Image 1: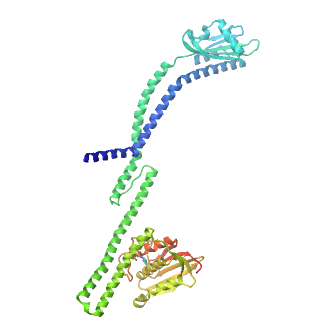
Image 2: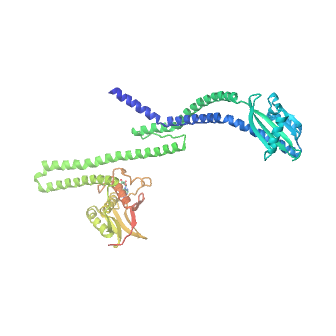
Image 3: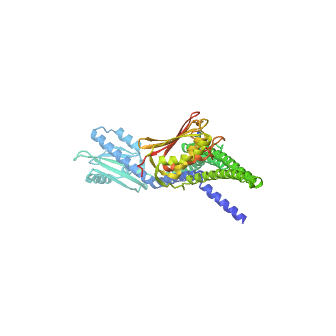
Length: 484
Ligand code: ADP
């Protein structure tokens, strides 16, 4: 059983390495080299003989053309014919119409077909050239005397009555020996190329896969919780970009992870405090105040308050989870801002009366927006609660709504400690929470994240304007609509 599992794991590993970048690059490169070699071989074998023949034919024809042109131009000398014959391995004979040889060059010695032919044979070829429309006769045949293929070109030149004839002949040497020589050399070159190519391909595949392997190693560490890991993708633009992205991602993960830890600590603390209170007061009722209706009622009030605290905290967590999961659907309707904010403010009367807070509300009648009422109320509660918590000594909170073109901007302003520029981008983060501070209203560290999620869900613009020591204004803006 164990052996089978080991065997399977081994197979899996082999499969994985076959799919690796390194192996893939190597195999493609190797295939490329082999394909090129095969192509060279096929081309060489299939076309060498034919190419050789064509080459010979072209030489014969172009030398013929050269001589004819020189004859017409009067610039043909014996030296020119000698040079042409010698350089191109050709036999050349120049005859008049009576068969008298005017000039001859023999590059092939005994192997020349025209030099070995009788006068009557040459006369026959002259007739063939005469009867050809373009005045030239070309043939490839076997020279029986030397048992070799030979090429013969006869060209008639000039005068209709007294023309001249150029005979050009060359042998098409058997190429088998040459082919086999070249083949054996090519074998050696191919073997060297294969070895070199395979070596280069292994080097290249290592070079290409190196940054990826490096990044994978770092990613593994990140997966194990090491957020200090550095991704290094140097080598290629793409891997560098990937490494940069991963560095950014790991930085973000580490930030979020830190905040999550803080939040857990804060939430645990916030849960423990009311729980301790609930327990303590319940014990007091049991042991001391159970029979004293006034004290019992006071203690029960504390228990109820603390339970509310717990419920608020748990609700916040649930709300945020729902909003972030996208399950918080909007129940949109037209909201009368004046009425809505007025009803919210009634809840703060006690705070105003007992703790000396001043709430200055400026929301004119006749302002309507389209929103989910319950969620909008939650946004306003969270913003006003924060304003209360951070309003400082002055204890004054402004809630305003103003028209801006076709839009309405709702703002909650406090005259408290303000928020520094560095902290401003962080405060809407899920787990961000200022150092523990004294609060009038319970805060969970989730309030602004809930605000953000709800406003995003509505598609409202929102933000914060703040200055340290002066206070903060949290605002959101949306289109004004007709009241219903
Ligand atoms: P909580 O208020 O429970 O800590 P929030 O998500 O509502 O959680 O706020 C996050 C942080 O933003 C707060 O801890 C505080 O540092 C900062 N903050 C929010 N509102 C204000 C405000 N009106 N004035 C100054 N700081 C604020």
